[in-house]
Length: 149
Image 1 (tube, helix red, strand yellow):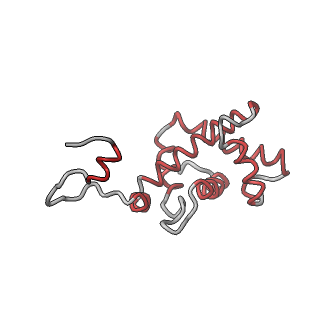
Image 2: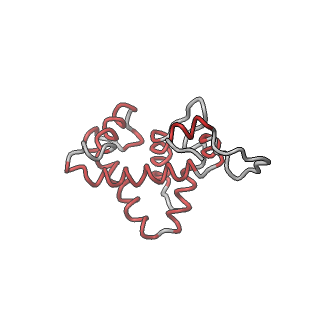
Image 3: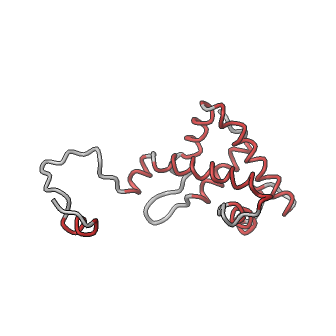
C-alpha cells in the first residue's frame, strides 16, 4: 500500500542483502519483512518521507556511480554502495543521508524479521512456554556470570 512498484522491488532486494537466507532460516523477504515495512510505513506518517527519500537517494547514488538504478546494478555494484553507507563511523560525510537511510532500513529489517515466526524460530526463542519444573539457572551459566544463589 505504501511502496510504489519500483520501491517494492528495491526493498525486496535490499532487505535480502541485509538478512539473506542461510542454513538456519530463509531471507528477510521469506519472513515477510517487506510486507511488515509496508504496514508500518502506511501507519507511521513521520517515517514515510525519510524512507521514500532514502530509496530515491539509493537510486540516485547508483545512477551517479553506475548509470542505473539500484535494482539494475550488479551484486558487486550494490555491495560497493552499501559498504560505503553500512558503517557510520567509516562513511564519508557526503554520504550522511545514505547512512541515515541505511540505519533506518537495517533497523526495520531486523525488527520485521525477528518479530516474524521465522525470525523467532531462528533465534530459538524458548519463552512463552510452560515449564513444569524450574531448577534454576544452570551452574555453568551462573559461573560465567560470576553469580550464585
